[in-house]
Amino acid sequence: MRFPHRGAALVWVFLLMPCALSGQETLTDLDEPSRQAFELLNESREEAGLAPLRWDPSLSLLAMRHSREQANRHRVSHHSYEFGLSTQRRVLISFPDVPRLGENVGRNRSVELLHLALLRSEGHRRNRMDPEFTHVGIAVVRADLYSLYLTEIFVTAPAGGTLAQPVVFYFDAPPGSYERRDDPRVEFDRETITVGPPGPDDPEHWTGIGINAYQSGDLAAAEEAFRTALELSPDYSYAKYNLARVLLDSGSAADAVVMLDELLEHDAGDLAAVMTRGNAALLLQDFAAAEGYFRRVLGERPRDAASWYDLGLALEYQDRRSEAEAAYRQALQIDPGLRPAQVGLGRVLRRTRSPAQPRPFEKSGLAGRRETPALFPAPG
Image (cartoon, rainbow, N blue to C red; front, side, top):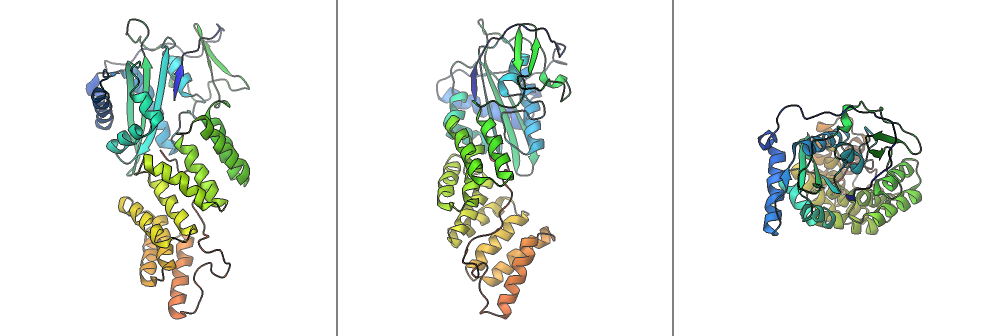
């Protein structure tokens, strides 16, 4: 996302005391993943004939706080749900004089895969290759063995090329300190920063509506909301992924495949999309393809019980009962309480004793229909 600076009227409330950075931070203070991301970014800019971006410690503190929030929530987002602040608001609270700013966020298994995925995405690449941006803050935070969350904050320095010290950091106030009403504001000095949930011009606004609609069982409203989010931001992978899941739940597996393949074209390492692509293959009764997708996930997540169950189902549909039994047993070894795997194992054992028994779901005529994981595992 990128934003022009919008001036605002003077209002009187002052919520946060200005503060300076504690200590002298230098490039050597970057942790290794963040340093690697910064170096790969500037290598790409130099290869494109652009000036390298200058690392800024204050922007990196903003990026670090947001990456930590994403990692804690296991959700990629430009919006701080902890504080109720968008990218623009978080940055302008600290740097009210910057004329332009942008932000990239993402999740992947490694810094290299994050870097490549951002370069393949048109919107993210535009931010990274923007010749007008002068400074960047970068932070990479690990959430678990398979997930790194990245935040890149880009700004154009005011005339003269110098980025001033931050006025204040949004996270110096405890969550809940910001006013929240229909048109809430944080006001200080000469700036007014609106605080609250994303507005209707923000794809996250519609994505949130889509999530609420899905959770209430209104798939049609969820689909409409996710499609509206994508009209505003065609590269917004979070909305695209969740739209694919809604389409799967609505029985439109072929349409879901289109969305998932687009996601995987941009980021082949998006394991959530790979797993869901396997689910789509099951619904389309392409069981060999489904097996391939689930094995791909397990190659990276060998202790993912749900993927072992999915693999068992794909194998069972191919009448490879002993392999399906082994997959279900592996799922239950990892998660003994995984009910679908318990049912699948019992079904395979019964079919082994009584070969004439129908395969799963054949009685209902809904071959491929299955319980699917909950929405919103936060794709990058």
